[in-house]
Image (cartoon, rainbow, N blue to C red; front, side, top):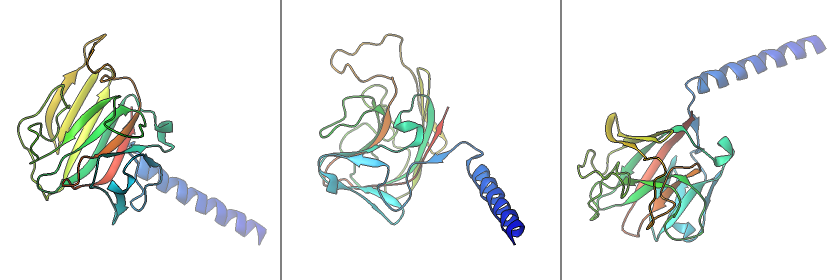
Length: 210
């Protein structure tokens, strides 16, 4: 009986290991469990952000949801990141990279990648905000699309679905006196609730450390 139990346990472990290997063989790791904000942290105006029906929904006064989980101890330098996003008409949001938790206001550290297909701000989805901006609108409101970000060294690539919209290399020793922390270093990700009239949905939030 004991031998049968050990064999069964080993077989179960092998199946679990095989499944995990299959799940992670391409290197992508989920940052969102699809049902809660576990592993994420929000400061002021926390009610602007919620998890529901497999999505993170941002809608309300300015708030930022920072990834605070175990993957890479929420400190990423070189990576690929992707999320499926859907905007409602007139909405604005953003995805921050190389940032740090901040209790309120707009994050001062890192870069923002724009999420905006029809809001009054002319910087459209995929913009490396204020650094290399996109004027064209490549996707529509009320439709899911994939926003992809890759950071490797000083190089940032941003794709909307499969189209590259930003291909940027940060200059060595870049100085931005008016915005001194708007540069590459390392850090976490954050999702933005921009204003009460903006409503944006996120799902399938994934990272591949490089």
